[in-house]
Length: 428
Image (cartoon, rainbow, N blue to C red):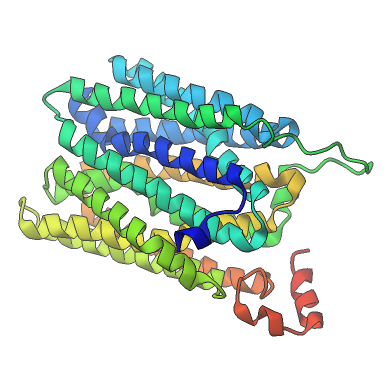
């Protein structure tokens, strides 16, 4: 199955290897940023939420700039310094104590991540054919989570709130892992160059051109709701609720994220196979429902509370169910994005998704931290459930804006060409 899913080009396979290595560092730090800021560096819950929100704000500002630079000067030239910036930011974060220095380190990391995250998707899309993209993005996500899971297990065995040096070690290790994809991309001189000069005299496309794409606008709205009530909650909302409300020790959070990873790695390739020929918008709608279910399970753990076994099982169950939604989302979302994108604006399309993640990274922590810190954990759970279900509704509304071919349904080959043409006209 792995041989069937691997992309044909060797360069794409090397990029996937870089994803695996760099994700090890992400796994070392991802579940523990909130705990590191509150229990080691002395931040309040609200201040830690704002600090993570600051990271999202910088990401939001830098993402459109990164997309523009990559479309004009080439993805490779912009991603290479981005990796170095992330390595530098993680190093500083490990060593400094003053809140202003910590915020500066988070800003440097966000600025470096702004081009590297969408740049990776842009490179993979340029190195694969459309029929294999969905499979490739699914494999990328499986490798990403394999690395995160291994890193999370290592960090869970190492970090100790009473020994700050253990957190410093994992952040320094995170910095080293950014240098591996940097070296891989540095050696790949034949990829990620700027598109050839235009021969027409029409106006140069930009983000306004991207936003005129009606199906993509709907996809962005879906991504905003799903990210705000999904991924943006992992670092703050999930960890804070588990520790503060369900009263489980940080080690259970690490186990939960390990279970999340095991589920993704075990199921992702099977899900990719099952997604072939099925509605992409239907899969996106199902993601919202699955995410909502995961938050309900976490809420049940909060009701159990008291460091009980039931609370721990609910925290782990939440992460496991959340993983099922991720296996549906991650092959489909970038595939649809790059299907709607044009070659000369591909980096801007992918950066727009990252920009939405930045907005979500601001909205998520600044609501989760204060709400949970004020003892309103139940209200937070209800809000997350409603947001995920609204994302499902938006995904279903996207179906009417895509042709059957774009929606990935196997019936596309049987569609009358005139009907397909009318569906394409809906983009205008």
